[in-house]
Image 1 (cartoon, rainbow, N blue to C red):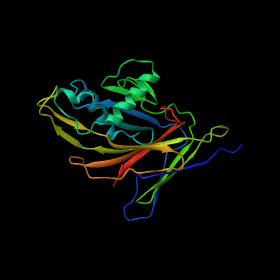
Image 2: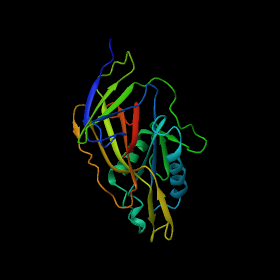
Image 3: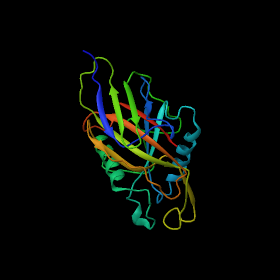
Image 4: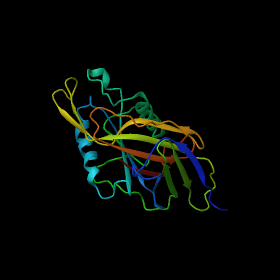
Length: 238
């Protein structure tokens, strides 16, 4: 059986040239690791984790071997500092992971690598090297047509696509809460998320956000209703 080729429509993007036509971004055949950090500006334990994630901006394997995403949760906002990057959707995603891990609680900072709890210090960033299929994204300035070609012999024919608009180079002075008086720096912060079934158009418009000096896009594929990514791709936006 030939591997299925699935088409997804969403408003996302990889690396492209602003003065050229549509550009394609491809994951490569080996599995690219999706690194998620659940964090909050209102959590005093989070700045070291944010600094660790921030150093990946200059890592040689960025986008090729791993795709980092920082998702700020909103359950620390009650302590007096409303994190402007936090969202209920990010919190719900972390709770979904906790349920999958049979845990009754969530926490920050929490690292997740390819759907599993993970310790960043000393952990391997890159994927496991196993074939994971090809994820190709084509951006035309309005929407992206992405194709996922799974590994030969894969029986599944239905997948879900997920995308995150990321902001980097953020400097955030905090004047209340646990980090009062601190100046925090963030990279790869999820500014907006979109996900849906194959063949649906997902709106994820790029928008200017105060304090963001550079934007990026992260895209990953899962089986329906699952959290573990099968393949991921990402890139800086011009």
